[in-house]
Amino acid sequence: MKDTGTYGLMAEFDEVNAAIVAAQNAYGAGYRKMDAYAPFPVEELSEAVGFQKNGVALVCLVGGLLGCTGAFILQWWINTISYPVNIGGRPLNSWPSFIIVTFEMTILFSGLSAVFGMLALNGLPMPYHPVFNVPQFDRASKDRFFLVIFSSDKNFDALRTRQFLESLNPISVAEVPS
Amino acid sequence: MFICFVILQWFLLAVCWLFYKGVGVWGVNIPVGWGFAIVNFVWWIGIGHAGTLISAILLLLRQQWRNSINRFAEAMTLFAVACAGMFPIFHLGRPWLFYWLFPYPNTMTYWPNFRSPLVWDVFAVTTYLTISLVFWFVGLIPDLASMRDQTSNKALKFVFGAMAMGWRNSVRHWNRYETAYLLLGGLATPLVLSVHTVVSFDFSVGIVPGWHTTIFPPYFVAGAIYSGFAMVLVLAIPIRKFYGIEDLITMRHIENSAMVMLATGWIVCYGYAFEAFMNWYGGDPYESFLRWNRLHGPYAWSYYTLLFTNLVVPQVLWFKTVRTNPLLLFFVSLDVLVGMWLERFVIVIVSLSRDFLNSSFGQYYPTQWDWAIFIGTLGFFSACMFLFLRLLPAVSISELKTLLPEAEVKVAHAEEVHDL
Image (cartoon, rainbow over the protein chains, first blue to last red):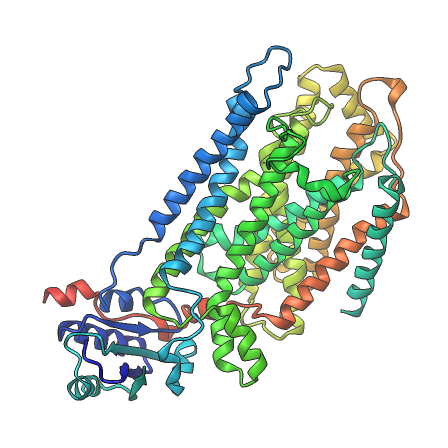
């Protein structure tokens, strides 16, 4: 990483297709450490910055399996080992009646894993981030699209990267202070 | 808003009196040990179901018209489930010990009975409340970030910023967010169907005439969606009128909700018909008596009113002129809400008041405290809805943007470009 005192360079676009084309060009020009910002989910834009797979589904699956097996084992252990109650000689491990709680706990654990997994993988909560230092970035949640090339990218060069971004017809190019 | 607040205070007063004196302040007694508390519980939780249906099932079916009504429908779910969740706690003799229902290691060395539908209910309702809350909040995160960016008020900026947790609209974050949101929708769908199924198990696992039937789970779920959509309309029609958002919550939303109501209403009526058929065809004398009791017993008025409100009146929804007339639709929805409340009244009270032995027949007379707590939850629900409408975005900002023509992506996918 070349320490240039900047976090990256930010190009602003007012139209989603322009932002996608810009991100694709940046990827084609060899930039890898970059990110794009949009007021709503744009699958093509995340593909264009080179983001393919996310681990949320896996976290959710693992959480669900844990909830499922944990809930069943807890009920089985309670009813057969810790607190066995003989009711008219009926089996202690009456598994059909444990299914409902097992099902509910599967849903609860997988749902919470999906959400907390998503937040953790996104690194949220994060109270501070350098991109917020750029004043026009407020509009990322409204009607503007941003492409940021981070200074940690091996091809990053304050001057050449700026010229490259300006060649993509953005509304503005701004430096993101680190 | 002021009226809601007054009702809310009335509710708090009634609850304090209930906790001080015990459930004796209600009209419940043997044989009717389950009074208004359970009727209201089932009614409220059913109302919640439409919110999840709109936000989860229609999300999975990619019905994009849902995008402008899902947020307030989810809020409706949350507050309705909160109202519902209070009643099982109120009807405990010692409500402050409600946590005994959860399995936790304790010095009494006891565990809850996992073979009991009432314990299943605890798990179903707490899971439902948690998942609804998370679903609603996850949907709010980008909107909170949007409000943080748009406000110039420093304090509000801090509050919204803290709630948005530093959401910065990164497309990588959006990608994971979309996956998590879809997964939640996929999980909430079987959950919502299971919750009312478990509620119906509270009855159908028992042997009381009128409860012990296998039709209960689907019949309860359909009834839940029926009353839930009625509540959606009761809320949406005034909101769109008084907040001037008729372009966001359009006639199409209103009409679609009315059609869902008509369809689920018929499923509920099928349930009534089959209950009646099985009373006769099953040949059980107690079930036959139940039929006679519903039609001619002391509570016959409730059964006839139920048939009128749930079966007869909603048939006007066949006519497009009614479906596109908000005022008429508002009254039909109110009628359905009353009807669905009566349905639970018929199930709980009519069955319990006269079950097997003539010697143990008895009547149920709700007291003013029963009414105060029921009407009080209406105040609680409306007060929460008003606060929500005032403080948070009632229509999803980020999801609406995806419906704008400007959001349409026209360029080729990344791989295709990279391949060139």
